[in-house]
Length: 229
Image (cartoon, rainbow, N blue to C red):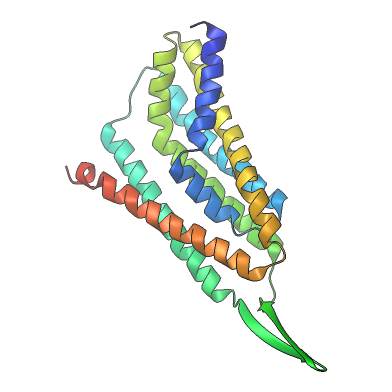
């Protein structure tokens, strides 16, 4: 396989890496909080930047000096991702319960009708900033867990250190691109359906939170034998 094909493969594998279930669940849960497409898609980009940071800062030294992280470290970082997913699911459910979305009926002359309300005053800019920080932190945690494996793939793809470094950077760029596009594809129909319907938005948030809880629990359960060994 020639050099260009190897670099193209790195980009493709990065995009595919972004579609792994734990990545999709985490970002979908965070993006479900948004009711507009641009902020939701931006979260995917922020996650990708967070993921790229440890791939560069940890993965590059591993490639240059041909080192390998111990399996115990990778198991612990993966377990940390599972814990974060569980915490994210619980926090999302708590926020949903405290949002106060409720059904209320009104009577105008002879007509009675009802619709869903979300009471209270919100600060969307401040909430958006906090969500971006959390998303970036999740990206860093995921990238830290996968940096060792990415470095191994880079060294296997190219014995030359310079080529391996370029391969690793393209892998990270592919992950960033893949996460942005995935979030855009997931958020677009969700925003179109829920932007004007509070109940559907709450239902999407609840489903994403439950998926985050379930997948986080699955990760911890699957890692239990390795953690106890």
